[in-house]
Image (cartoon, rainbow over all chains, first blue to last red; front, side, top):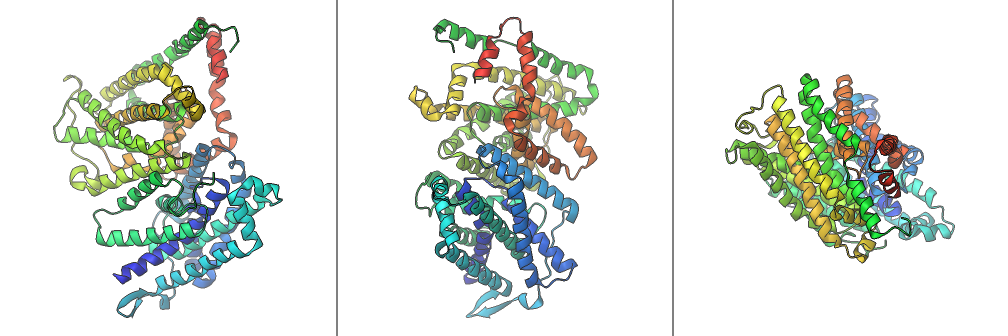
Length: 286
Length: 345
C-alpha cells in the first residue's frame, strides 16, 4: 500500500518535471504546445546515446540532456514558434501536431522503433526496506531530484526578479509590456527552461515509463491533464495535479487493472466541464 | 451590402449562392467517371470517398460552426464498431439499414457529448474531444469479448447490397456504394449549409455573443450541428467497416483525427468541397509518399502541417480561389452575385 503511494509520488514528481514547462508556456502566451513531449523525448534519447554509446556517467548525462533539450527548445522557439503565437488555437494545434509527427518519424528513422533503456549505475537498482515499505532506489532518487527542482522553481518564481517578471507577464502580458518588461525575452527563456526540464524529465523517466519514438503521442494526454487539472496560473496547481495523477494512475493500474486508463481520462473530462480553469487555479484571468 | 438592397434582393443573393455551379456538376461527373474509367483504382477511390465523407463531417462543425475538434475519430470509430457488431452478430444484415443504424448511434453519441463541447474555450474543446476519443478507444480495448480488443473485430460478413450486389474483392460494389452514399449525404449537407440554419451557424462562428444578440439560439444550434456531424462521421466509419469487413482500434486513433484536420486544411474549410478535395489530395499524396518511405510517412504529414501553418492557412487554402473566381466568371446564371457575396464573408 505504502509502496504504491511511494511509486505514485515518484511518478507524479516525474510528471510534474515533464509538464511544468507546458503549464508556464500555456499560461504565459495562451499557446497550445502539443509538441512538449517531443522535447522530453529529445532529452531521453540524448541520455540514451550519451550513456549507452559514449559511456558518459549517468549523472553527467542528466544536465547535458537538460542543456540539449533547452537549446533545441530555444532554437525552435526563436525560429518557428514565434510565428504562431498570435494565430488561432486551431493553427497552433495543427502546427504542434505537425512537429510531433515529424519528431516521431525522425526519431524512428534515426534510432529505430524499439523501446530503449538507459544503463543506470548498479547502486541505483533494486530496492530496500524502510519500516516494511519497499523503497526503490531509483524512485527515491527521482523524488529527491524532482523535489529539489520543484523547490528551486518555486524559489525562482517567488523570490527573484525574473520570477516576478514572469508572474507579471502571466497575469497580464499587455500591462507587463507596458511596464517595460520584455515579455518576448521572458517567454523565450521560460520556453527554453521548460523544454530543458521536459528533457531532464524524459532522461529520468526512461527507466520508469520507457522510451520509444511514440513517446510524445503517448504522453501528450498526460501533460494536458496535468495542465488542465492544475491550471496555469501557479506552479503549485500543476504540482498537486501531477501528484494526484501519478498516485491515481499507479494505484488505478494496481487495484483496478480492468478499468485502466479511462478513469483518468474521465476525471479529466469531468474536471474540464466543472472547472474549465483548473481545480487549483485562482479563478479566471482571461 | 448596398444600402438600397431590398429584402428581395438579399433573398435573391442567398438563393443564387445556393444554386448549383457548373464546376460542382463537373466535379460529380468526374467522380462518376472515375468509376468507369479507372477500374483498377476502385480500392483507393473507396478510401477517398470515405475519407471525404469524414472530412465533410468535420467541415460541418469546424468550417461552419467553428468548433475545433481533436477527437472526431470518436464518432467515426463508434460508427465503425456499431456497423461491425451489427453485421457480425447477424442483428441487422442489410447493409443500408446497418449503415443508417450506425450513423444514428453515432449521432446519439454526438448528441450526448455535444454538451461537453458547449462550455469553455478552444483549448477546453480540444482536450474534451480528444478525451472522448481516448475513452472510447480504451473501452474498445478493454471489452475485448465484445470488440475483439487489440486484434480488431473479425469475422464480419456483409450481405449483398439490395440482395444483388456482392462486395467483391476488386471493390467495384464498395466503390459505387461509398460514392453513392457520399453523394446523397453531400446533397443533404449542401442543403443544410445553405439553409437558414447553416447561415446561423456561420454567424455563431463569427461571433457567438452577437449571434445570440440577434436571436440565434447558440447552444441549441451547436448541439444540432454537432449531432449531425457525428451522424456523418458514424456513417463514414460504418462504410469503412462494411467495405473492408474489418474494424480495429485504429479507427479511434489520435492520428486519424489529426490526419482529418490536415485533409480539411488542405482543401480549405467552410465550403463543403474542401473535405472532398482534401481527401483526394491527401490520399494520392499518401499513396505516393508511403510507396517511397512506408514507415516514415508521418514525417511528411507533419512537414505539410507545419508548412501550411507557417505559410498561413488562409493564404494556403486560397489556392482554390483562382479556380473559384474562374468558376464565377464562367457561371452564366449567377451574374457575379455569388462572387460578391463570397468575397464579403
